[in-house]
Length: 371
Ligand SMILES: [Zn+2]
Image 1 (cartoon, rainbow, N blue to C red):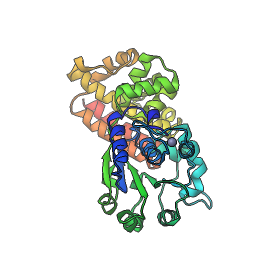
Image 2: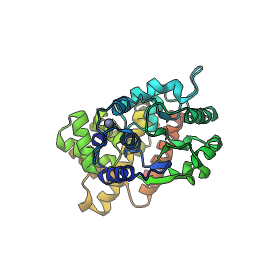
Image 3: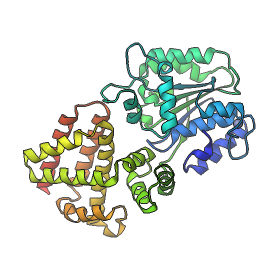
Image 4: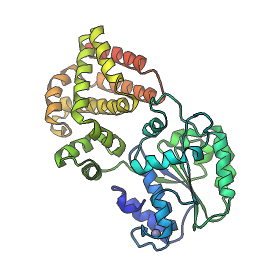
């Protein structure tokens, strides 16, 4: 992966390149960026740049033997660790490496849930980075480097390493020479402190609307105005933007409108029916749908209290908002947003979808009625 195929983040790319050019490469770095910001592709591009045989001041060459292997994620000195699920005898990242390469080739901006669902379509199994995986990292680092300048270990989502992560402490503190660890995390609070304190943190910001618009136009051939609208909804998250563009934004709007009407009507039948249509779409769509729901609630808040700032709605959504916003106020919106965030957390962690949505719908129903 070259820097040029990564959207936005220009300032950070330059910083990374400078550190490589000046030989100031810290041996354990934590790329910390929210979902869809491009932290993983940046980590890969950085490792590729460091190992490129003829780098330019702005990018790796993309065509030397090292780059060619990096582009396919098959360089023998590039090692990946990522959450996996228990399937038959498969246990470590190595056992899933071909699925991983395929997923990266498909979409290097994939979300945690998209990856886990790539392994288990039903999305019911919990992801994990095991103690065995940590021992495997030690083994890989102990091997002689095949051909690279820097042997690189990229650990995607170290949030999954609990106490077993302590197996790696000594290695992170004093890795063998010419070894680079890049941990790619979304939430520093969920990375165990002993690991966090041994890394240098590189912060990655959410993408700009312009970068996301560009990505959508490149990848999904959307017209500019539609790409622009989705970019605004996605709020810097390219993984979400790509799912929204695939599903068709008006699907989300219709589903949301039906759901909210059902909650407002307090009819158990209507609520159950809307839950059926939502839960029938699958866990990954649901997570994007909840992201979309948050966007609609934020918009409702703006619509009521700062209408001049309301920029992020399509005509269809605006028509819905004109009526919907009357059921909303500055007291119930924050509570509803919190409830939806909690539900998204549970959806991602394999909770029963029906029960999650039933609880959420009843709560929304109650709050709407009070407004
Ligand atoms: Zn190269």
